Length: 218
Image (cartoon, rainbow, N blue to C red; front, side, top):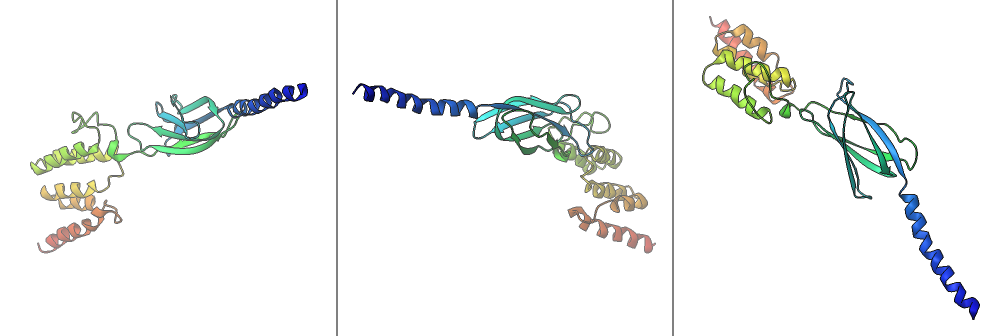
């Protein structure tokens, strides 16, 4: 009977030890580094990088250095989501595995410029317009056009284009302004700069035809 009484605590101790050692093994941590860059390959400074693990319900943050590099130490092993954010750029994310020991794969996050949240211009016609995105800046340029201040409107549209080149439809507005100024050659140049595969590209050919027809009737 003494032998049976001694066997019970041994079994219990072994049962309790199993999850303890399993928990210690699963809590091993690793090291991850990476870079946030633009499409040209240049590092983006001061970008916020967030690391998130759903299984571990853990979230960590850091910012990139002057070369766009970042690192995380002490992340549990497993699949992690890395998200990069910075004003003027579209957010980007990627998954990467974290190893229990040693250095994991390098995380590369390439950020595209976001034309609708580009930085507010510091010079030119729109220098004093404070806005969180380009909608307000474009409204200011349209207001100049509506007031008949076509030279200033053209400067404003070109200032926006300089900072947000993807907004190619603004060439259409620039063309309209030159047409109102009775400068058909410059209007044609602007209209022809509108890409055909954009919504404004369907309107530009008609505007070109009107100018050419008016020139032919003279």
